[in-house]
Picture 1 (cartoon, rainbow, N blue to C red):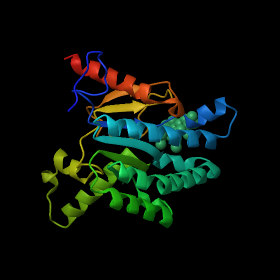
Picture 2: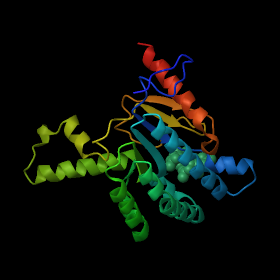
Picture 3: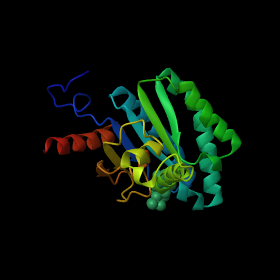
Length: 242
Ligand code: IPE
Ligand code: IPE
Ligand code: MG
C-alpha cells in the first residue's frame, strides 16, 4: 500500500475513499456555452468518464459508481434520449475490452428492461467478460433511481412474506439492504455532484445515509484529475476532523 509522500500528495495513502459515487451533471450547459448542440457535451462527458475511471483504478479506489441515466431522464426530448442510447452502446462497444485489459470489473444497476435488446445484451456481455477483475469495480447506474431500487427490494421481501417464508416483523435494515442493487459492495464514502446543483436527484437514497457530500460548480466535461483530487482532499480533511 503506498503512503502519503512528504509533499502531502493525496495520490495515495490512508483514508482514500473506498467507494466514490458521482452524479455527472452539466454536459448540456458545457455545450451551450460553446454554442454547440447538447450531444457535443455528452460526447465530451464520455472523455471525462475515461479519465476518472483511469484515475480511480490507479489510486486504490475500490468502487466507482457513475450516474449515467436516471429513471427521470426518459422525459427528455426523444432526440436527446436516442442520442444518449447510441452513445451508451458505442462506448460499451469501444471500451469493454479496454476495461478488461485494465483489470476493471463492470457492473450495471437500474431497471435494464427499458433498454433495447441489443443494449441489454451488450451490458450482460460486459459484466460477464469482466466479472473476475479486481483493480476497480465500475458501477454504471443506468435507468436507475434510488426509489426504484428500494421498491424492487420491498417487492422481493413482500413476496417472501406472502409465501410464508418470512414474517413481517423479521424484516430488518440488514435484510432490506441485502435486496438492494449493490449490497455486496461497500457503501459510498464520498459523493460528488458536478454542475452546480446541490441535490441528490434520486441517486442511491439508502446507501448515502453516511456519505460525505461534495458539490462543485465544475461542469462534468471540465472535471479532471485535479478536480477529483480536490474532492478527495476535502473528504480527507473532513475525516481528520474527529
Ligand atoms: C448530465 O448532463 C448527463 C446526463 C444526465 C445524461 P446534463 O445533460 O444533465 O447537462 P445539463 O445539466 O443540462 O447541463
Ligand atoms: C442527474 O442529472 C442524473 C444524471 C446525471 C444521470 P439531471 O440533470 O438529470 O438531474 P436534475 O434534473 O437536475 O435533477
Ligand atoms: Mg443536468
